[in-house]
Each structure stands twice: as structure tokens, then as C-alpha cells.
Amino acid sequence: MKLVWPKANREIGFVDALALTGLCGLLVARFVPVARLPFWGCVLRQRTGWPCPGCGLTRAAEGVAHLHFAAAWAANPLGTVLALAFAAAIVVSILHLALKMPLPSLVPTQREARALRLSLAAVVLINYAYIILKAKFPALL
Amino acid sequence: MEFQCPHCNAQFETQRSGRQFCPNCGQQIDVAGPLAGPVADSTSTSGPGFPSPMSGSAPPSGGEIPPIGPPPPGWMPPGGPPPTGGPPPPRGPSLRRDTPWERRGELGFLPALAETWKQTVTTPEQFFSSVKPIGRWEDAFLYAWLLAVVSAVAGLILKIPFHAMLAEQIRRSLDVLSSMRQVPVEAQRYLAMFLGVWVTVFQIILWPIWMFIGAALVHLFCIVFGCASNGFWATFRALAYAQAPVIFLAFAPVPCIGWVIAFAGWVLMVVLQIWGVMRLQETSAGKAAAAVLATPVLACCCGCTGLFLLGGALKSILTGGS
Image (cartoon, one colour):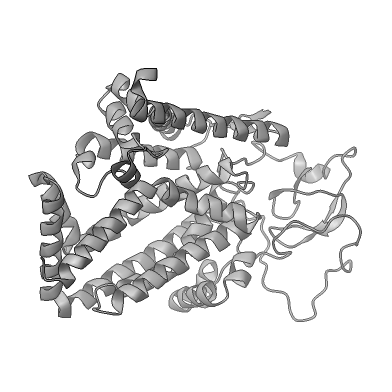
């Protein structure tokens, strides 16, 4: 894993775009009653009773936006982590654009990148298993 | 191994040493072996380090990039063709150059815009193979925004003859929505506002934000799927130049055939996005498709519900609201 620290700069980049994404998403989650919109909801869950991997993402984002972290975690743990990561990106981007804080470049080797992808896939599966257990077999939790 | 082109300072990865072409500027370069290290005069001033998927920093703009145009017919590099032996260069072209839009100072504003649009839609393979992955993002951004504005204004003009009919459709759709679930008053107000004329204003103002959000999400999945070697701005430029079919979305208000044209334009736009990511990130079609389509697939619930809602609304309109 190679970590490169550039010089102090204000160049717009990927982290800033992620921060903009997170800012818009969290603002919508905070001020717009998205979950109450008529076209919002999981058709798979409504029709079959089984949740999809993305079930609870809206509630997780709303929970983080309203600082109700326990409710967010209960809705979708991975979604909560993602929402918090977006919030962190907002802070980092502000520091980068306002104070020229350099953003490090992280370059993993091919082997490390493969390991990271496998870990991510495993985390997504574990998260989905938790959502299924919570929706269908809550007594097991 | 990583190598930096001494002509354009672009970083790229190569599997072999020896004489070859820079995938960014097309100039012939001599890659030293791994023990000898990269070319001294280029790497000694390499600056902050390799651009990685996480850095996304723009290329240096120190005027070091020589003006390069398309080669004349029969053109051969000065030293002859690159040596055979060793694996072929990764996917992508041997020559990249500024797009017609990026040469608008030379070609003229409208001809450059039209030529870029034409190349994007009619010859996407040649076009995206020639776009520089680390060129100026501002040019691509301005191009996409201009097309979005043209599309939005044209759509607004096309709405005028069908205003009464569209207003009735919006009213019926809102009725259908309200009957499906208890819709809060503020939500009804938001929906009415978005479905009305204001959608054009929002489209124009929010388009830049949407461009960045879309590029960020696609690039996030590019990193996940391992196809982000040329950095964030390559993804951004691919998506921005792939916005050309947005013009077709202006026909959406036209009754009967409008939605067909708009849908075809949207499909073409997605295809061009995949094409663009494939060529600018120099990856496979499968990885590019996965990166571009991951966001809509992740949002499948919303998509399925939207289709369900659309079907219900359509049925309601066709059956006279029964």
C-alpha cells in the first residue's frame, strides 16, 4: 500500500464530489419526508415480505441526518457507516477547500485491492444477512 | 510498472519496457526497464505523486502539452512502428487529442459544439478512443451543461402547444399518487412544483450538481470494480461527453412518440456512458457497465416502484381515471 501526500492545494477532486453527494443526500434526508412519498418503498419487500440488500438505506440516512444513530444502525448498519463516511467526506472537503489541507492518495497493490474487494463483498453479504434476520427472523437477534 | 510520459507528464501503467506510445498524447516514448527506473528527466519533477483513484487531481497546466492534431493519412512515428514482441498495449488508442469542443477557439463555438455532438452520437468508438482521460474537466462540464440547457429550453418550448394536456396529466398523476398513499400536503406541493414548469428551472440550475453526484457515484463503483486507473476526472469527462443524447429528452412532452424518443435517448446516453468509461478508464466493457449501472441497480427498489407507479398512472390515464 502506497500513501502519497501531495502539497497543500485546493484542487477539486473525487473526495469533494463525494462530499457534495453526501451533503445533498443528508440535506434531503434531513428536510424532505422521503419515506412518506407514495412511490418510495421496496416492492420486493411489499410483495414477498423479503427485504432487498438496500432496504433500510433511507431510514439509515434519515437517522444519521437527525443524529439518531441507534435507529439508523437498526435500519441498515452498512448504510449507517456509508452515511457517516459521506458526512466525514463533507468535513474533509471543507478542510481541503478552505484550509488547503492535502488529501492523501492511497494506492494499494493488486493483491491488496483484491483483498479489499473481497472484504467489501463479505461486508455487504453480512449486512444483507442481518437485514433478512431482522425482517424475517427477529427472534434470532 | 508506472511510467510518466516526458512529453505530457501523464502517468500510466505499462506491462513492458522499450519503445512504445503514450496512451495520452500519442508521442513515442522509451520506457526504461524496471531496474533502470523511469526516465530521469520526467520523474525527477513528478510533483505530488501518482494520481490515484482517490486523488482525482487535475493534470498540470503548465503549457507542457504540445499541440497535437490527428495524424495525416499514412503517418508513421519517427522511429517506425513500435517493436513487436511483448504484450500489446492495453485497450485504448495510441493517439489521444483534444476534442473538437476543446478546440473551440480554433474551430468556432457552434461548429465545435455541433462537431463534438455529432462525433459522440455517430462515431462513439472513435470519439471516446481519442478523448484524453486527464484533460480539462471544465471543458467537458461546460459542454454537458450547455446541452442540458438547450434540451431544457427546447423541452419547455415544445411543452407550450401541449400545455393544457400536460397540466391535466400532471393533475391525474397527482390524484393517482394521493390515492395510493396518504400524501402529506408538503409532499404534494413539492411534486406539483417539480412536475410543472419549474422543473425546467431546476433542471438547468441543478444539472451541475447532478453531474458531480453522478460522476462521484460512478467513480466510486469504478474503484470497487477496479477500473479507476485514470482517476476521477476521466470518469467525469466520460460521463460529461456522454450527455450528448440529452437533446432527445426535449421531445418528451410530444404526445405519442415523444416518450419513445426520450426513452431511446436515455438508453443511448447510458450506452455512451458505458462506452466512455470503458475507453477513458481503459477497462473492459463488463467492468464499465457494472460501474455505470451499479447505482441504478442499487436503487432497484425505487426503480421498480417507479415503474409500478408509472404503470398504474398510465393505466389510470388510459382508462379515464377509473
